[in-house]
Length: 142
Image 1 (cartoon, rainbow, N blue to C red):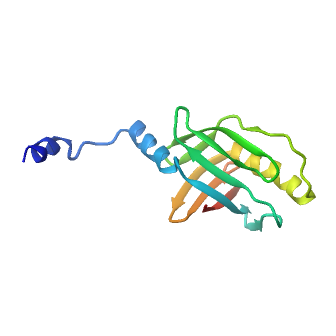
Image 2: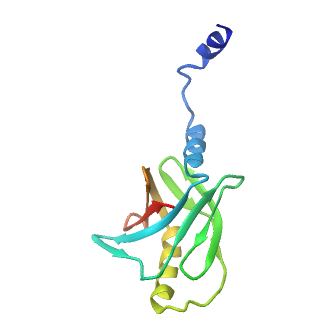
Image 3: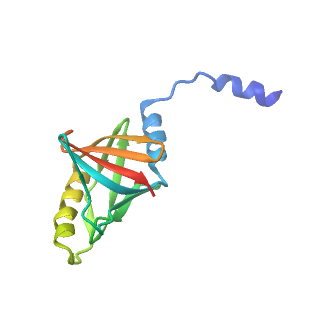
């Protein structure tokens, strides 16, 4: 009975914008994704054969994103504000790509992350618009 009385005053308390952002950020924290395709304009393109680009969101202050871009590993901070996702400066290792197609894919993928915008999480899927809405990265849950 006491627990019920203590819970009643909390019911209906509005969530502030900063609390909403924190909750949205936590929705990404602890998730891992594998890039499936790029959509640029109306054209969808698959990754080069044998290329694996990943994205992992970790909790913390600041929250960190990391992954494999195709040839190199990367990491950087990220921020969520409502339905928008942005990344801080992204640092990468500097290994040479053995595949020319992957060597062309990797900087394209990293530029897309650096210009991230609106994101959406649905069951098993993450989409991130980039380049002021000119393209979309499509991920599946790892």
